[in-house]
Image (tube, rainbow, N blue to C red; front, side):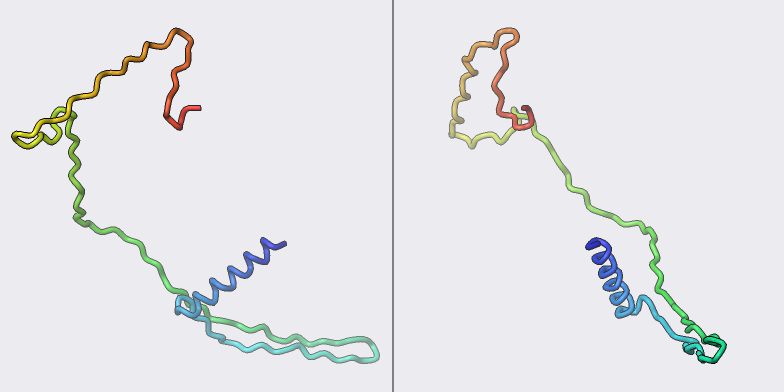
Length: 118
């Protein structure tokens, strides 16, 4: 029930916004008339009224395409041996030694720091 009420409220807000911005223009072209009702000895008699008529003009949304030139960034990946060279006279720090851990035995799980593996 709450969902239906929420949807109705949203529709009313959208309709008010569309009318306020001029996207929808509603003009009444024929007024309403109530039916004529009489009570007689034989019962109730009614003669028809008239429903109102409206002329509704809506805005148009046009979509199209156009050509445009868009700058695209240039991405370069430098391999590890082509990284920034140290300045002349400066020494680069020594490379760390390779890991001295023994290889895991068959069937043994290897600890990982990857959060995607569980």
